[in-house]
Length: 92
Image: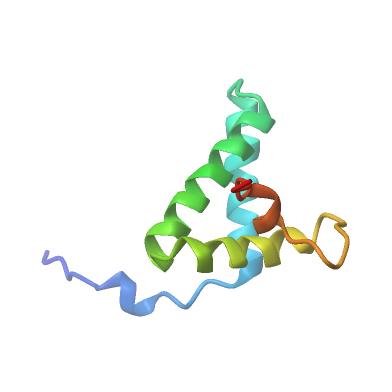
């Protein structure tokens, strides 16, 4: 009997956003079942994602604007303020 090596990467399709969300939910639920607090898992994931975003983008200002757009979908803030402005230290 001979074995045939199949390149599985060529057979895989691009993941959908629904698949990404489903997999993240599975990770969160699995770690919660195993005894970790879900808040810790989520915060660790957010931290890891921000670190990866910083590596991918390479520009802190651009990264902060991207994060600002994401946060804007979930948190109400006056129209004349951004999260970037809230994080930057005052030079006064």
